[in-house]
Length: 307
Image 1 (cartoon, one colour):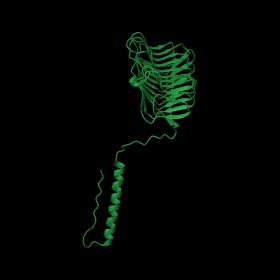
Image 2: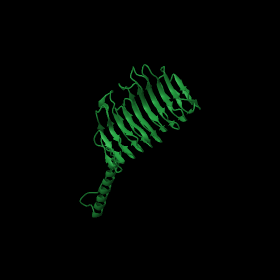
Image 3: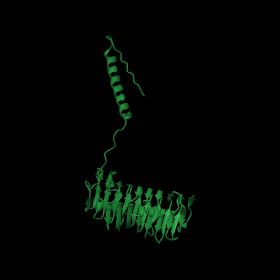
Image 4: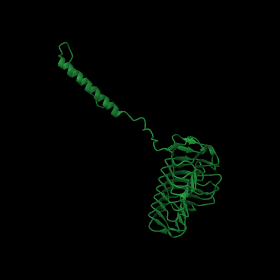
């Protein structure tokens, strides 16, 4: 702590020059103390969010977007619908920017069949900075091409966190957490990618089939020739009584690259770290631990296996 003391000559015989000097010293001291106070004061608020790029706002649910552009959230939104879709994308070239606000469907429960965001046969859909929770599908986009799902959180969705079936698409830098336990589906998926989709740098933590269900998948691919599954972290994938648990399951018959993924299992029977359709799928520089079977069919091009 810095203390500034100011002493002025006072008294009946003080000359005017001394008084002027005293006043100047008081003013300078006060300015310094004010500057110190402003510098040391804690920051109590964040800078206001900018919405300059927004074409419009989504303010209630369910909503349908039929105009191209960037559509934003500026508040948390929630719905209790048990079927249908919270936000339907009905045109091409749409960006949904949630600005870190929540799109919630938890009130519908484990029997929900409602979707968070749905696009069918659309091109160039972007979803970013969303917190999507409690839906059957967090995001469901099939058909079209050129989609980007990034920098979002998917929490407590009951069937699939992210599903993309669209050529030349990317799913990257998302957190997919606590997916599963649907009462109307027996196989559950953190991320499901079809048709040349790159799945990059995501964290999947918790995919759980119900006790009497079948299989749970961290990342599942199908017909995803030429895709890349790279840099993902997968934890806590729990199978049902009659199924398997997979870190990454590649059901594509063509070339696909599984690289730099960190996949951790619970050592239970029926658990497989990396599973491929055939040896055209190259597994390189992955770290796999805690699975009853580390690799199944994938071509091992140099990986680390920890029991």
